[in-house]
Length: 90
Image 1 (cartoon, helix red, strand yellow):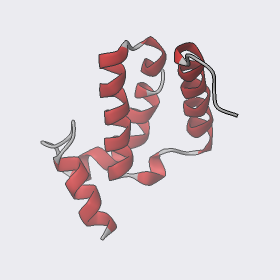
Image 2 (spheres, helix red, strand yellow):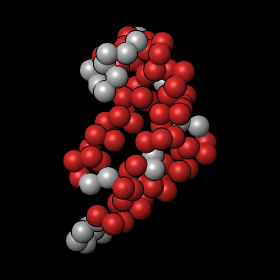
Image 3 (tube, helix red, strand yellow):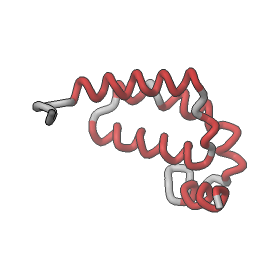
Image 4 (cartoon, helix red, strand yellow):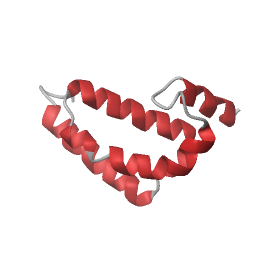
């Protein structure tokens, strides 16, 4: 089931033209290159970068290791803090 889901995501995303066997070995490197782009991206590009992250994780959930997860969380919190507007409900 998981392999079918990964195949579906791979075919319906930025890597739709590449077999999973090609993307999976490169997935950690792809994520490592995408995470720093989050801070530099505008709204439209940010949506594409996040979609690419989702796509890669759909192909290989193990690509997001501990250090990369920490880096991703830090970057996402920075983007959120920069773009958060208004008050939050109590």
